[in-house]
Length: 500
Image 1 (spheres, helix red, strand yellow):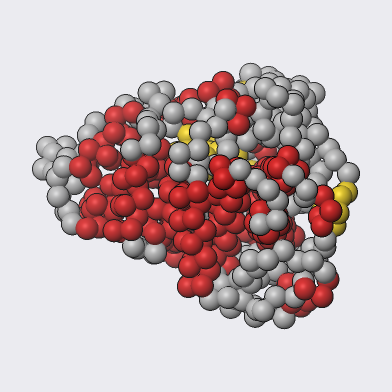
Image 2 (image 1 turned 180 degrees about the vertical axis):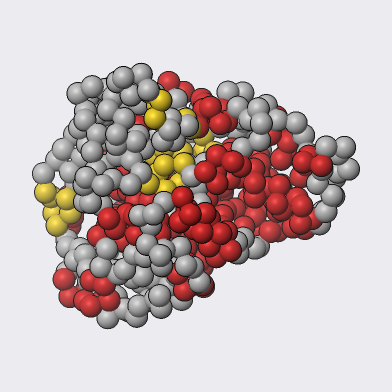
């Protein structure tokens, strides 16, 4: 169990000089939390530190549990290095409570929650302008809610920590809170964040900070998960009024030359020039056998950290003909040094070259405006199937992808959507493709109740193709939809374990 102390490590959280991105950080030393937070600039460093947790979490944990656990991606079997076998077990639903990736995900989440709590506590004792007070409060309440939203969907009820831990004796929790209590806090935090951030405009150097739009979009996603469609619609309609739009070119959502653009609502910020803040998805998602053919970086050999998040045949087969998102998102293989094509598919959505050896400048999208359009279409359909707005919202996303509209009574059976269930299926399919490799698929499987059926069928296909997959892999039931609580937390904090 992570024992948080009053001594806070604020490594890599100091603000940059004027004109640089707010996450272009410089290392600091250890400082004492009780004496450090004396003025606005120091508290702003703490806010930035709360953001900083996402940088590490985004490099592995978010895609490992949000994407690779789904039918969208798997891994390239590495017969020469078995150093990350637990990642394979996560993909196969064979992971146990002692697995390091589960503990790391848990610790990263609670580190983010703790840093958010620290900011909220110090807001009360530091003289700030009203605008700054609302901004900082809104940012960290969003972050705390984001971490709890991930935790509750992955583990169910978890310890609810709303105050920072000031001594080892305070490290023990009151046990696992109920799922309902966790969601109540998430909704409270996001509602507060949306109101606090209303009207706040950031400078160019602060692009990428959390906004009212981000808080309302995540709140809508929470309501959609809880099937509270009326509440979700209220939030989504407010987001629509905030001025976001679809990029005409789908790839602009991932190209670092267009970071934080018109479609971006929130994305994890990475800086390839910084030794702590670079991204490396291009390397992790490249086949480990591909040398520099995929990355274009001959100085960074690929090994056990590569070959992850490999697109499955299930996903490849799901694309419609002429969908321009296919070529932007993945490739079916690469040419080796001898010019021979090797048929190992890989994600190329984040492949935009490197800034320095092993480092890329690519952000990771968390919330995009196309998500708002598809969530709103889904909610409207749940209120009652009809032609009109819901179809228009769905077809905006399809048109950007170069696809024909889906309509009622279409002469092409593949484009005809004639009842509420068929519209649900159309939205589910569109989300699978639109957000492929953006860590949404597993959560969509969960909230729609399709995870057990789809993953068992997917697993049966995978085992037919690969002899190295254990016979007991992909045998899902309702219990396996939740991750096991890290055994270290069960032992030290007396938490009850999820049945597996």
